[in-house]
Length: 348
Image (cartoon, rainbow, N blue to C red):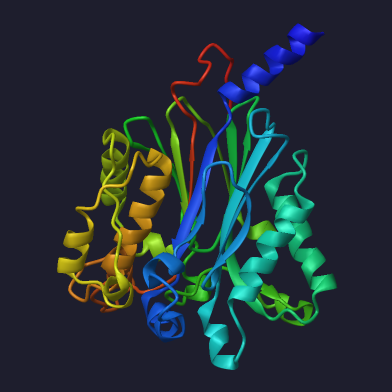
């Protein structure tokens, strides 16, 4: 019996995911916060929200929220789950904090997580519980959820709106990417979203309208989940280059934007900060931070033909430059050095 239990723990440990997350509020929000935080330390560092390797929980990043959790311990977790949500900013014009909806929804998903329940059902339950228990909650949010089975290495994903997820192989080539639900009712930049309270939710999409995806992860695969603040500013090819840089370097150069860079990044400040080496940063955490820093920098570039520009052009609209927004990233990796390649893989 002892040998069987030990073998089970080793199997879980060999196929468990590494998980981390980071994010930063939109630059215009940092400008507003800078005066309040002056004298309290490095504003750019204070603005960076992080969940390092081995950490879990729900965190708010501006109007975004991130979630990391698991069942069991660090080495024998049967399931890992993670998500991002983006509160729709238009509610701020009505004096409502858009971040409340995104944070409440992910916290609700964490509370009702059940490995035997489909992600669509889980999202429906979390949304329904909030409609009944939080009648004061007003707003709407996009959401992307994922659940990973350590036993089968199967990753299930549910996405509603313009957040999303991609899976890359050990060479950082794209294996899978979710599709955006960006133009609700044919309106550009109006993503599908879940709304609160109950009187309002009937006018919006239901959790059951989320799109579902499944993929079996291979050794070395990397999963990137993010809100639209990243996807609107970084092309897939740039994302892949960032991962190659982070994982190939033994000592990783990570952008350390100074106070001025946080409020108004320039080419000179980014180049200067990029020469600072960090001490043996874990590649996944380093990649997470570089992605956020790169998206932050490009969001303020007024001449940059961003992915958001391309989307606007496809919709017959004119837009030039990056798109300032909250940027939230969750990364996951199935380490090739630990993977037990002899374990049978589940079929899709």
